[in-house]
Image (cartoon, rainbow, N blue to C red):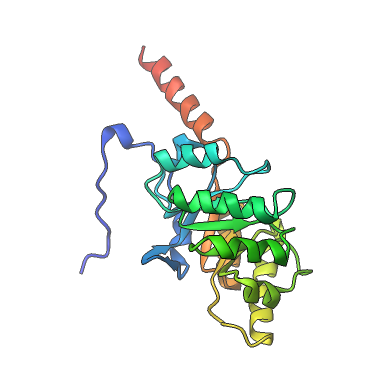
Length: 228
């Protein structure tokens, strides 16, 4: 049997933002029946509308804004994992943003590292979609957050991400928790770093798309200058 996968595309969509191929090696996470392996981390609606990732992680360093989520949901044809705060934006406000995110089509909500147990519990009361908690170091009580209602972890430890994923897996085992608890992790730079993260136990990999729009536009302009 020929294992080469046929490709269907078009001339106008030839510059699609492609997921690093190595990410396909992860097990994936089933989110409402759809398997998620690759997650593009961006708020650039042009990238979201022109990428082959399985989902989009809409998290940014400002107070969650319903208009940003509305813009993303308008163009996205893939599941949205929406950031709803947890630090400065917390408690009832995070819950309200989470409710809006779900109503706008988000299939999961993401809370950042400073999120308290009280905020998690507030969000649990108003959303039906899974709650994802961001792990940035080893100072967090994972069991406490799972018991509060967290359904998956988003590990973002920079260059230490593979080690942090391995620690999360160890903590789950040590505390008698689900050994298959879903873990999303940032892939880092290059296939080698992504592979380390996969081997450490990540189920899905997020990758950044910084500067993709600008680089693609520059490439197009150089081509146009040569042709004219």
